Amino acid sequence: MDREPCPDQIGANNSGCGTALVQITSGPDEGEDITVDLSGRTASTKFAEGDEVVLTHQVEPGDGLYAIVDHQRSNQLWMLGAAFVLAVIAFGRWRGLTALAGLVVTFVVLLLFVVPAILAGKPPLLVAIVGSAAIMLTVLYLTHGFTRSTSVAVVGTLASLTLTGLLSAAAVAATHLSGVADEQSAYLGVTHNVNMQGLLLAGILIGSLGVLDDVTVTQAATVTELAHANPAYRFMQLYRAATRVGRAHIASVINTIILAYAGASLPLLVLIDANNRAVGEVLTNQLIAQELVRSAVGTLGLIAAVPITTALAAYTAHRAGTVAAVTERRPETHRADGWPHAAEGAHETTDLSRQHKDRISDR
Image (tube, rainbow, N blue to C red; front, side):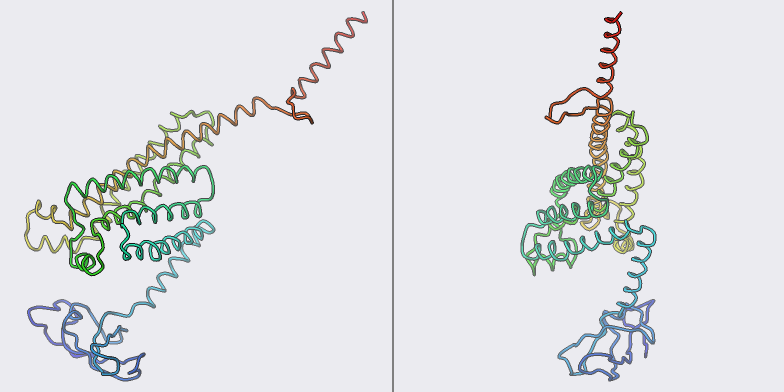
């Protein structure tokens, strides 16, 4: 690899410009050694001797004109994926396996339904609603089983997701966000005729779903465990106790959401700050404003999910406990003809009374 300084500081702090000798391992020129230019886009990427790279033909296959596109990292990603799967199964066991199955369902819905439907010109928000509902119903029941607690989490997630969609639509309209904030979004809107504002709303909805189901499942499970621990708890007692848990959960999740969006936008934040722009100008930039709207709307949806899901779970748990208590207090048996009759103890009492009366008569 022959390195040389890049013009105008392009490629500073990396491998620099120049040329590299690359051995082709597939394609029409397999086995040949070629010299590839490192200037241009590849100048900003570090390359070292022995690296596996991806090449592209500049003109036509077989003409010997190639350019480096990126590093070849498929093997490393496969190893990382295998480590991820093994760790999830080793810790979660059967529950971890069902969680991985749910993850597969999520990718299938996103890649085979949501993305193709949006590219086909369907309303992105409507597509996101249908896709999110399909993901939620499948993943929650697959991961947590067909239980009353899971059904409560499903209803709570649906209600919170609907509210999040309405809030995101109102926030995007109020802040005049178009969804076209960078070159990629502008290119997508022009070349594929995608409604970029609708795509922004769809992204907010799908992003919120990943955290909403976590909160709703936790709240439903908390109420269920409280009801089992103390069957004497009534609706308000269950609601208040589980809400305290929900407040602690929300306090940590809010910080998680903000940090996640900040981490995704960190290069942009550094670039804007390097240009010495005012804080107010930075925050109102459309790229940053989009992330602020995502964070605010997602947080509002999470906050609403706690009381909604907790109330539903407390009501169903209280009703189930009440029915069980009544059933235990009032055992009921049926005769062969289908008519209810008194319990066996009542028959025994009646027989004893008759015997007592017979003894009195004998006297």
